Length: 71
Image (cartoon, rainbow, N blue to C red):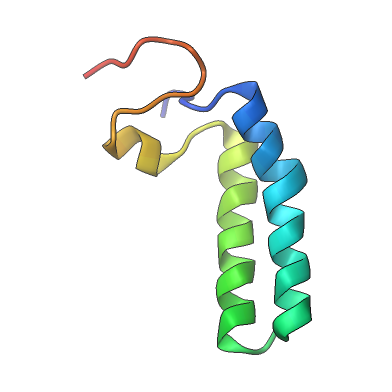
């Protein structure tokens, strides 16, 4: 797995999106369906932000790290 996320993309995922999704989950109720979905998406944002690899970017041949796309 080659990194395909840039620094700003990674920081937004880890420092903004994941915490906001956790807060949203708490607001709607952690045990509710919406809360569980929000926590799952927060976990994905955290893992992809820390690892620097987004599988959806890979499928779409996208990169935010400035390096050329390899096929």
